[in-house]
Length: 288
Image 1: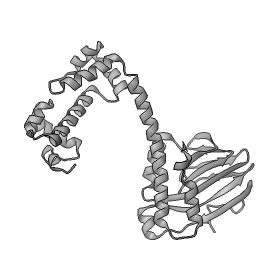
Image 2 (image 1 turned 90 degrees about the vertical axis):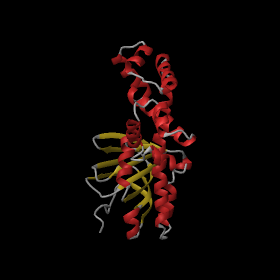
Image 3 (image 1 turned 180 degrees about the vertical axis):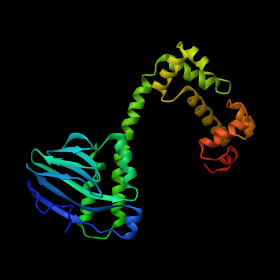
Image 4 (image 1 turned 45 degrees about the vertical axis):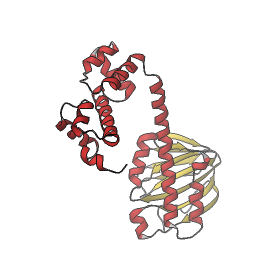
């Protein structure tokens, strides 16, 4: 008997499944893997309330809408929405109208980290273009009763990757909009840095160019550029240094000077920190 699945679920009008899947021990150790899934047509009074289940669940609303209560929040998922929940957290969902949805429970060694990142970025409600929503493909594979662990895992990786990409595109669009709105005084500062990165640059110099007090300059710079003036200058110099290491035969000491570092020791230290321990000399020897 499976205590996770109630014997009687009022409100279910019809269903395809449940389709169960039994992955190998190796799959459980290495991959995302499916536990079970199906497609339901439901209506009032369909409702599920869980305190705990050691799995994740993903929904695709094909028609109608579903109401969710999860992590002290309430929301409605409508046609073409995708919902991702961690069932180890209390959750409740119910239908207020006739609704068709597909779903599957899954887990894996890396699933928690992927879920955490997605929830941090967007919460649990998503939308994908039809060509990137492979939930129907995953259900078809489960229903086939074939042992195709890796193929199912790839489909789950692709689905979760598409969800991540959908949030990244949102971030990039926001960033692009912010970039367009960078005021002229900040553009002047960026131009000055690009033309003078080999020389000493201070926050006082940059704030003077912007005609702002040092305090307001630093706040405004971070608002529009996304980082502090000091970090931006350092990152700019490191990028120029990496280009010179790869594209020229200049000595490391010369590159250090050309890119505005006050000593070769300081250059090597910050370069290594930015590359996870790779020194400029080792960086130059890598194949690009």
